[in-house]
Image (tube, rainbow, N blue to C red; front, top):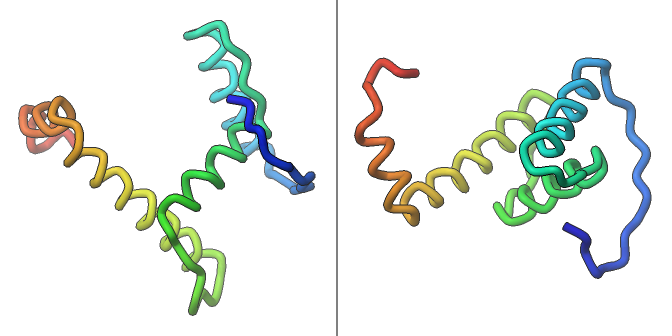
Length: 100
């Protein structure tokens, strides 16, 4: 999970709920695999994931529009992954229609 690139420090403020969510992800990884992943790594991976979507922020007027555009970009990646993974496609076809 280490990257061989120049990194830069970013300071951010998170709500208690956001911090607890990152802590939960961190603990999930530790308990399920024994590996440690830091909050910083989770945020870095999220930024890398968004970068792969080629998303832009042109025309974004507020935080809600930005969140919606990020969700749409991530959903696009998920759809692409479903197309490429035969097992995922098979599972989605077997899922009950009222599961969501």
